[in-house]
Length: 112
Image (cartoon, rainbow, N blue to C red; front, side):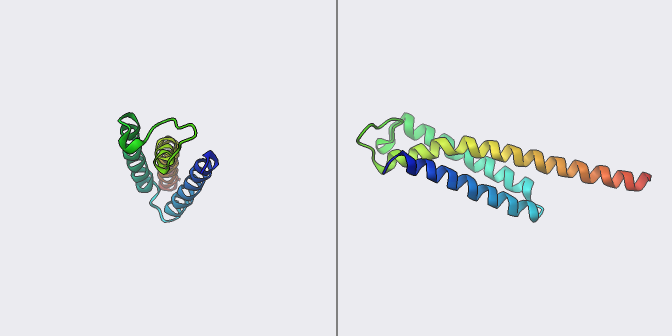
């Protein structure tokens, strides 16, 4: 395996998460999905950080020529969550903005 596998998996995770958030948005559950995504991503990131810092089963931030699957998994688990946390924050903002627009439209209907 090489680093392109890590890059490809991070892009795939991001794309699948975007799809899941789009489905949640269409179902009216974007806020809930964003909060769950944030929580899960944060937990994964903390666990990955602890695994790398303690070198759990050989997980490390660097491996030159002797990379094992644990190194790739720890790399993905350490790199992807911040990206997904940012995506969750954007989804929360979109959800909140949608609620504000809905409330404003109802208020204008009642006054107009």
